[in-house]
Picture 1 (cartoon, helix red, strand yellow):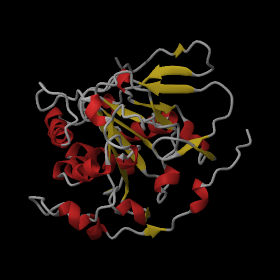
Picture 2 (spheres, rainbow, N blue to C red; picture 1 turned 120 degrees about the vertical axis):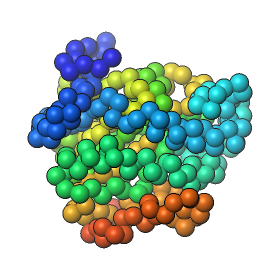
Picture 3 (cartoon, rainbow, N blue to C red; picture 1 turned 30 degrees about the horizontal axis):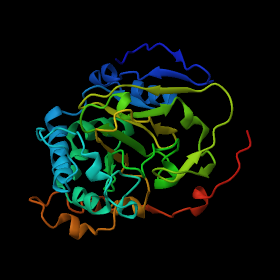
Picture 4 (cartoon, rainbow, N blue to C red; picture 1 turned 180 degrees about the vertical axis):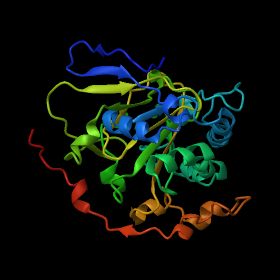
Length: 321
């Protein structure tokens, strides 16, 4: 599925190439963070098979699917980890109640944001140890975690090609961590990244439909999109200037559950909104039914420096190629 020396293959009728993710586990197992930093700089991403334990991933999947079940959107006759949807029930949700960047209604997304397991998984020791080595510094985990619960509701379209930096700002050395909560082959709409695109820095945007509501403007020429089939526990991470997008799902009967988490060195500045919930709830509302207190307002102890928001990064501008 994934190889340390993947073959490229052309897509008929297009100038882009597609290739498979390089698995960087061998470098991580050796503790070779210089090698990981070099590969990240060359490729614009790092991919790890099985970095997260399956049991930890399944706990969050089960909890998120219990929310889907509560709203009547799961097809009957499945175990607690089954992600087959009742499409008719889901499409009865009015368009204006949906979070089209997430895949479910605002009310359901609020219930997911209240899950303690959802907020705990990004702090797994395997992730913290990796980012601590990558940054050569203590790690700040942004608390603004995003759940993607991609469904075939009529308002949904795949996430367009974009960079995360204009949407999160703060440190230019922030890395995004993306992982599915369950197996996610390319046919379910896994993520793909544009190889080495981070080296271009900020790329002007245009307005677009889909999560983030922006798309980068790519210049003509040969490009290499890197992709792969994900299994439970696989992790993809990339700098905030790497261009990425979601592949279209060809399995509309299934929900694609995944998480977007951001990490940075604690010594660098963060933009204030990255410390707020990714919904209309307050932290007090999110924390109300949690069993433990150790992750509540954890970032306050680090007292991170704050950086100002720059509105101009989200203003469409014509790119000169």
